[in-house]
Length: 105
Image (cartoon, rainbow, N blue to C red; front, side, top):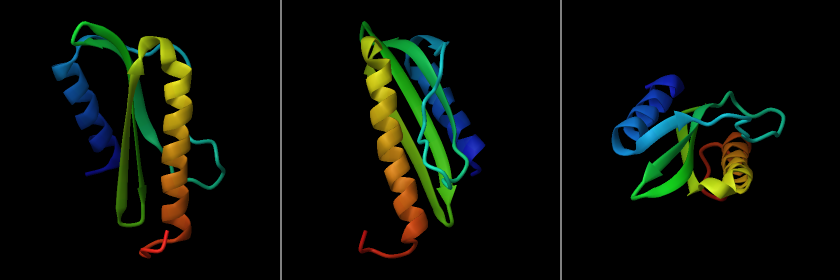
């Protein structure tokens, strides 16, 4: 699957399994380090179990490795969720690029 197809599948699952799903208005923060591969993604405000939530998906490929990160947080914590998600995803992509195929990360 391409990164776009993986993102589309995640978006489809969110729309199917969550209620009142609307695209997140505003910036969608991802990793900012230079040299990372292209990242596809989407972000939404939605409800699940009666709770208002922010949920984001980011997808990228490094060589033979595919990466997908989902971040979900209370609606009031969008900035924190984006910051943490970007940090974790950026770290994983950077390590995959600088140490491909090795287990000593």
